[in-house]
Length: 81
Ligand SMILES: [Zn+2]
Image 1: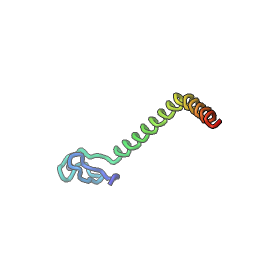
Image 2: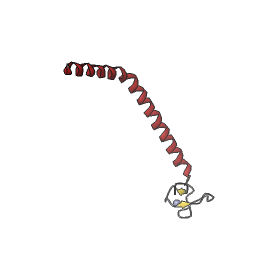
Image 3: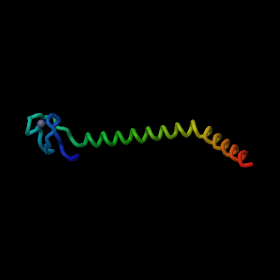
Image 4: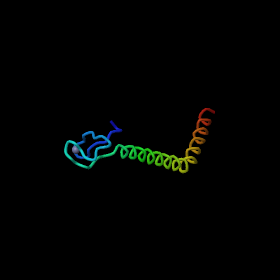
């Protein structure tokens, strides 16, 4: 279904060699490649966003997290002794 051409007006399936929709006569045929292009772009944007967030969190939280981890270790040592 995703590999098929569709009419942009009535959503009817159109063969790839057809220049116009046989239902409504519209020449506005949607290619299946637009969908995959959108998918790939969306995946790329998601991956880049994830990477940026990961780098941002690593830069801004690594030191405080380590400190708080050490603090909690010291606190637990104090509590046990
Ligand atoms: Zn149509």
